[in-house]
Image (tube, rainbow, N blue to C red; front, top):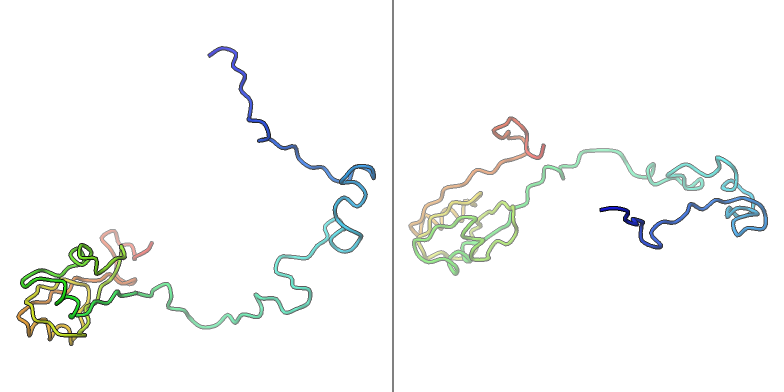
Length: 165
């Protein structure tokens, strides 16, 4: 390669600003700190979260109770009327087929079949959760229901880890 002239592009390296070197410079005089006061002093300023005597936010908010939010399970719901419209007689209803037919759009999702509407076709349903009313309608139309298990936060996977760890 020889003697190549390798240098950073122009304007990519900026020199550090040094304040407080005499009155004549742009950053001389009060060195960009204004006129006196707590923030002009060495070691001055207020600690993070200080609100000037007002009760700070971190003390205004109650630290109480329990939130179930990290363990929340959201279901995407599909009614039997939708299945009747989108599926042919004898087809299997699973998350894969629901995705193919664009009934369910999210990637990782727990699906629950609900009993809204009528079902006239014989379907095999393999889905995470089915309401009692939906199950009755599917079985009345001559179909079968096999619920696929849903892992909850308390169940352990094969490695012995709890979900999400």
